[in-house]
Amino acid sequence: MLICGIKATHDGGIALIDNGRLVTSIEMEKIDNLDRYTPLGDAARVPELLRTAGIDHRDVDAYVVDGWWAQPGQDPFEPAVPLRRDDMTVHLPVAAYADSPGRSEPMQRYHFDAHDFGSGKGYTSYFHNANHLLGSYCSSPFAQRNEDSLVLVWDGGTTPRLYDVRPADRSVRAVSSLLRVPGNFFSDFNAHFGPFRLDGRGLDMNALIRHHLSVAGKAMAYAALGTPSEAAFPVFDDLLGRFPSVVPQNAAAMAQAILAKRDAYLPGLSDADIIATFQEYLGQRLLAALARVVAEHFPGAPRNLCLGGGCALNIKWNSRIRASGLFTDVWVPPFPNDAGAAIGTACCEMWGTGLTALDWSVFSGPPIRTGTVPESWTVTPCDEAGVARILHEYDEPVVVLSGRAELGPRALGNRSILAPARDTAMKQRLNLIKDRADYRPVAPICLADRATEIFTPGGSDPYMLFEHEIRPDWVDRIPAVIHLDGTARLQTVQRTDDIAAARILTAYEALTGVPVLCNTSANLNGSGFFPDVASALRWGGTRYVWSDGLLYTNPDPTRSIA
View 1 (cartoon, rainbow, N blue to C red):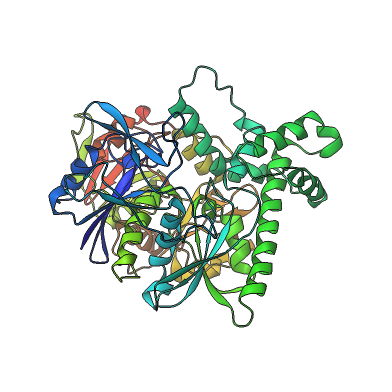
View 2: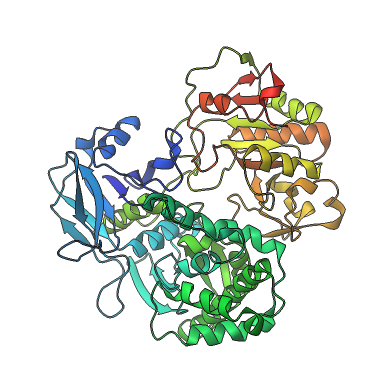
């Protein structure tokens, strides 16, 4: 059965599942250097994107559109997604954003005939929460082993919710909400502090949405400039307790209350301290609530846990949960946010066919293209060992564009800028060429069999989703990948992984004894990954660009930013 999952709103795109195997996932931001978080925009995009995957849209057996909010100004006021169709905007009815305990089942299926995407059969829809729930579970090793798992979903528009998934009878049960704090609260609150304050006058709605969606990730990094103060926790408890209901406006109201009486509420705390404190506060409260609910509903042997929703990109919260010992194992997919929504909603339909485990690879995005190479760049054959020699001998960053793009928001080697980590100045250089704030971290990519030697806890972490500390005897050897608070967002690769980045890193270790390089995403500022070599050459931020056996060299190094 061929299933096409569709995410129409921000982080738009499609995913295609064929009898339980992920064929491809194409996020809009990863084609044509489009802005991050770009929505699908036009219904005609669906057959266009399918054609790039070699699929005729008429051969798809089921189209599934992710659930969403009711659209303001629409009559009736029901959940819908806006799409262009025949030169006009229509609102396709869909499932709601989240299930309602006691009134709807988590996996409730809806069918609509408002559009058929060429199938002649209409389309189905599931709750937005359900895409995060099953996108996380179906991609997990627990699903591969047919094991039960709890799933914690905490996305922007919902409070953190715990579900119980049992593949033997394909049951999905809502267990409990954990906090009266929706996922957007972290970004909406922090948007009033530090560099995230925004005068939105003159910005269109898409620009405001992109800014809003970018705050959470940047605030996680900015928090390293501050020091958490647990003495402030009662202030947050008190202010949150004053809200009679959970509504989106609460975050701004709490921030404004603090700003009005800052010296009384949080004396002596800088903006960075406040952001760091609020992040620590939410992490502690989440774990305490999770421990309480698990003890109440699942006493006895520890259970598996999957994490889904945008909040599962917070590596400090993930690490706190994993280190708690509450669970046998903790899984976070590389696409826990809406970048994986098309995959998750397709998994919802797959689940109904009786399949519970997804056969997938993280490198299932669009393939790299070459494009038109500027005449000023030279092109020479070069293998991965040659890239390692350039990194070692010239101490230069190299854009690596290879194979199919990664799923999700993190560059994992196929759309990366790799660089030596032996000098702190390299982090500053990478942030400069990418036009990023200097507090932003650069991640380490490390050979998995040496990760525990260098990092704590180390071990396998292939998707940059947990926090690690660098062991003291390595601090001076790889300073470029150490964040301001002494931690690192580690990515590990196996020597046997069939990707160019693993071969480059293995060759680099053979030359230097160091199994670590800097890894940051290869993209224009504010856009998704480079879709082709030509984009990286036109950008010109590095002297070297490598793609699948060819090295592109800028003969005029003044064009790259040093």
